[in-house]
Image (cartoon, rainbow, N blue to C red; front, top):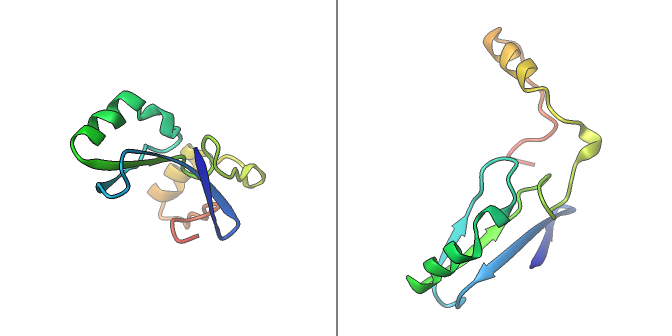
Length: 95
């Protein structure tokens, strides 16, 4: 596995197949490591001609963790959303 660094954030990723194949980026759901995309599945996609890339989201697996920002209280976020209050997340998709 390999890491790429951007904006002081390291993202762990892994690839399968020939880089000249059609790239296919596998995005795992929130809080789940890339290893949930099992190698057998990735290899099956390689046999279909894809160059498979899987990665750990930030705060997950071997990618950079932001533990000092704390764990968001999901119920608090839902309550604020229902009440029309402003929600201030520790970071956003734009970060």
